[in-house]
Image 1 (cartoon, rainbow, N blue to C red):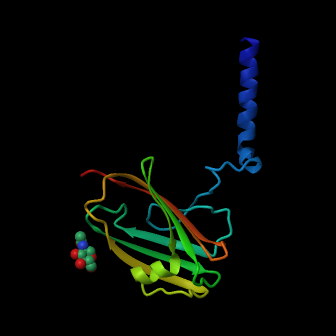
Image 2: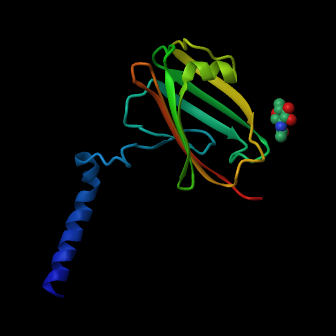
Amino acid sequence: MTRYTALLLTFLCAFAAASPLLPAFFKFPGTRSQNKPISGDSPLQQCDADEKQLLDIKLVNLLPNPPVRGENVTISAAGYVKDTIVEGAYVDVEVRLGYIKLLSQTYDLCEELEKNDVDGLKCPIEVGDYMIEKTVEIPQEVPPGKYSVVARAYTEDDDEITCLSGDVYFPAY
Ligand SMILES: *[C@@H]1O[C@H](CO)[C@@H](O)[C@H](O)[C@H]1NC(C)=O
């Protein structure tokens, strides 16, 4: 073994030993978000799980899971809202198809709830337990591929309400 190989091995071992500690020292921009599984049958995870969030998501079910192009999908979810959510809350949504960013947009949370009639849910959303169900049709025209979605909701004061992320794969046939 040459000196250099030994040096390299030593370095690699030291790096491997220290790597579990690395996230504590550095906040890598791309790996900042901690994911946590959500109970139920869905491709969604809770992201930013190490951040304080106003919504405690207890369950998310997608029927069918995975969703199918040209068919209806019903999403049902249960959660606990820890603090009243009022007008001014917003959602940042990002959708990627493979590596292509398809959409990066901010929506008014209260406005979207009214527009899309999510079980009649309306702002202000008071503290308490909620269970919602919503059916949407996935157009047949949606291009096949692997979609990655991240949605982060915030109050007007930029307190995080929730962070959801997930991958959905639509096969060509
Ligand atoms: C989806 O559900 C709606 C309302 O229940 C229904 O009118 C529509 O035909 C359904 N679409 C499909 C593709 O099953």
